[in-house]
Amino acid sequence: MSLQGKTLFITGGSRGIGLAIALRAARDGANIVIAAKTDAPDPRLPGTIHTAAAEIEAAGGRALALALDIRDEEKVAQAVARAAEHFGGIDILINNASAIRLTGTLDTPVKRYDLMHGVNGRGTFVCSQACLPYLRQAANPHILTMSPPLSHDPKWFGRWPNYMIAKYTMSLFTLAHAAEFKQYGVAVNSLWPRTTIATSAVANEIGGEAMMNASRKPDIMADAAWHILTANAKKVSGNFFLDDEVLIAAGVRDLAKYDVVPGAKLQADFFVDALPGMLPSA
Image 1: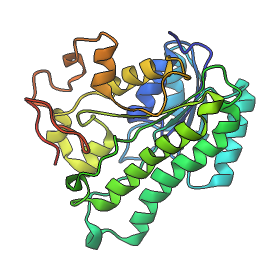
Image 2 (image 1 turned 30 degrees about the vertical axis):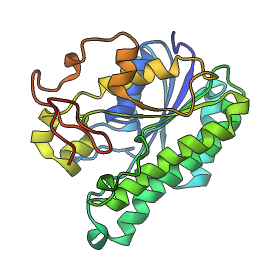
Image 3 (image 1 turned 180 degrees about the horizontal axis):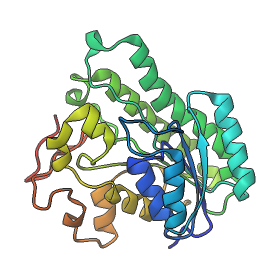
């Protein structure tokens, strides 16, 4: 039940959920590859790959910061090869990088549509393809993708169809790759939050301060990811996990510690139904 010595390749890990997962693994003594675009400070966003690497090493892990746009398959292949050479292999891939635009069909520029599908679905494919040869050689290999449970319910498609389809593409790869690589013992799962998570995407793209205050901290996703990634890869694959369900199954009972504002009514995330007492998803 530890990630000590494991090498994690995390896309979009310079902040938010990706960084939280990195720091949780770092506390075990893991090796973390931060593969993200933010190489220099951006006034609109917190952190860079370099500040993330410094936090990881301060938490007890080893870090490799790589500036990477996962839409560039050649650069992805080079980054994965460099990471494997630096740390002696790759044990875990976290498909965390994602692009969002909450607009309808008529209000979504094609350029933005291409960005969402290039980062979300295509990026998941490109990174998985590059990492799988190394994962097949690992002792307990995992791919964990930050994407939602699949559903045919039209309510999740009608308002922001382009973003929804881009995220569901990531989830479809979980189903596909779990089946394709089962014979090699590679676990492929998805993880999604029950509630909105206090990240830059929520602050800048979705709901601002009000929704941030109705969210949980990224730590809940990090702790849930840790339980999945320390499980036997041959026995846990092809699942669409929700963060709170993973933690409750692991015996965690105090979920209030993850609330941004203690006692606030929480906002259910997209793609999942609200539990009693939560604000329903938009």
